[in-house]
Structures are given as C-alpha cells and as structure tokens.
Image 1 (cartoon, helix red, strand yellow):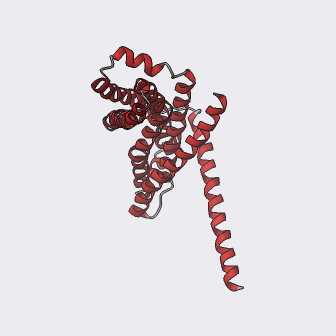
Image 2: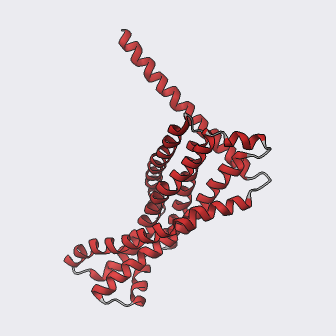
Image 3: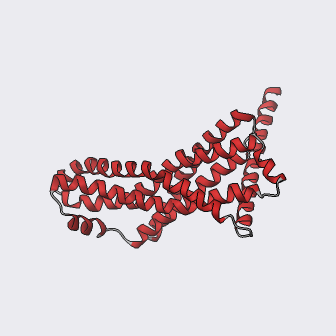
Length: 262
C-alpha cells in the first residue's frame, strides 16, 4: 500500500510540474505578444538579431542546401530510371524540396545553431544576474532580449528557407545537367510545372511557425535558466531537443491541413 501511495504521489507530482511549466510557457507567450505591440520598439536590436540569425547562418545553409539537392537527385535517379521516367526528375526534386526538405532541414539546422545559441546566451545572462541588472537600470530586459530574438527568428526563417530551396535546386540542376545534359531552361520549366502557389505559401507558413517555435524555445529556456553554468548547458540542450520535437509535430499537423485543402 505504501509503495502504491508513493507511486501515485510521484505521478501526481510529475503532472503538477508539467502543467505548471505549461502555464509558465503560456504566460511567457502572452507577455511576448503584449510587449511586441507596445512602445518603445527595439528596432536596432531587432535588426541586429536578424543579422545574427540570417547572415551568420548563410554559409551553413548554403552548403547543406546544395548537398541536399545533389544527394536527393542521385538517390532518386535509379528509381525513376527503372521505369524510364528520368525526365520526371526535375519535377520530383522541386516537389520534395519546396514542400518538405527546404523548410524542415533549414529549421532543424536553425534549431541546432540559432536556438542553442539563444538558450546559452540568455541562460548565461540569467545566471550571472545581468538580466536583473538591466531591470535596475530601467531597461525592459524582456523586450530587449526576448521580443527581439523571437521576432528575428520568425522573420528570417522564411528567407532562409527560400535560400535553402534555391541552393537545393541549384545542386539538383548541376547533377541533372551532368548526367542528362538537360538545359537550364528545360530544367526550370519541368521543375516548376508541378509547383503551385499553395506549395510555396504552405512552405513559407511552415517557416514562420518553425522560426517562432525556435525563438520561443530558446528564449524561454535561457530566460528561466537556473543553477549556474550547469543550467546554461541544460538550457542550450533543452532548446534544441524541444524545438526539434515541436517542429516535427508542427510539420505533421500542417501537412495534414494542406493536404485537406489541396
């Protein structure tokens, strides 16, 4: 009986912890939307964070997108060649990159690079009491640190997704041109003949959702970090894990909605 009571107590405690954390997350989100639309606005810091999120990720995104285009083309060619449908390769690549690979891969890269950086940066500021010092100096730390970063990740992710898609298509074209001697004009015509505006809009909507998720996960974990330097590491690690998990959940839900509309 004592063991059963102890197990019930532990389960109840875990549920209480989960719902308390969920309540804190919703409060965090509510404060973000409140601070976002109230003056003063931190335009300069927002632009600075957009630079950190976007420009500093270009090299990694360029290399990854280019490799994805080449590798996916190489993997798809044997299957299509078996059925004598190699001419469909540009259409297949464009559908895969625009609908799924570009937003998903870019967001996962951003979750590892940008999200962990935000979590570690805010976490170190939290445990060293720099955030408390900002409050004493009459600066709104939430608006300056959190609102600017979440806004930057939300705005820059669609741009990075478009750029990743462009690099992926470039890699695919180079591989197809080397093997099938397809011209650039024919490649573009075949690639975009099967892409609709719904595919592009849904991809950009995914990017907005993923960028917002990465920003919220990083800022929340960093802004609420505790236990010194150990808490900083936990904040960075938790940001990556939570952001990737939520991205996959959002991907599944958005795909279902888009397929229903299509």
